[in-house]
Length: 255
Image: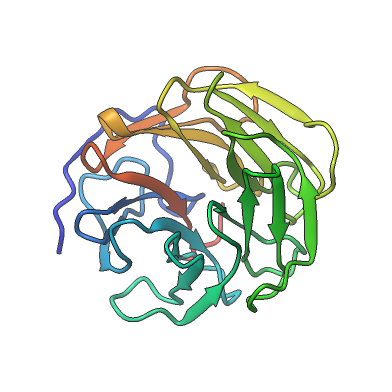
């Protein structure tokens, strides 16, 4: 079990039953630490999974309403996914993408199951699949540019995840309401240099909104609206160097 030092600076507190909650991936130990509140004093679950250079993921891979962990391994362009937040081997091992790709997760067709995709910086294109099968991309969307980081979420509450990017050079989110080429439907300045984008339904209202994880201070800084402004939920979880993630770990319905 890994200890996860935490410090709370919550504004405002939310009931445990609502929305997505934080997690971290500690690469040096290949440990996920997951919390069931927005004011965590400790991890509610710790899971040993993955390897040092993996990129952590979370999604509802089997449609049971509960998000579970996964990793994308850049060394072999492979997704490795678990159907429970417990120690064990990957339930799904899925080659997808090519060298240099960055992973993205979302329910692209609204069927209640998350599936995978990649953003290819070399051609600024998303390659998405609706089935967890090797190299079966069904949606190809040119969007973003070199240096951008991919994000995905249900920005308008219609039950379908759509693409977006976070542009570190000017700390802006560029979000689309359709998995089709076109201009961003929303451009939102948020965060600061070295922040990492983080997406979730923080208040349980069925709409995903933006946030960032600040590695230097292990700080989650989240908004309940896709608009500029100060963080509406802010707390620390983990230690410097951890990678932040988010999910509905309990599967408890919102509200």
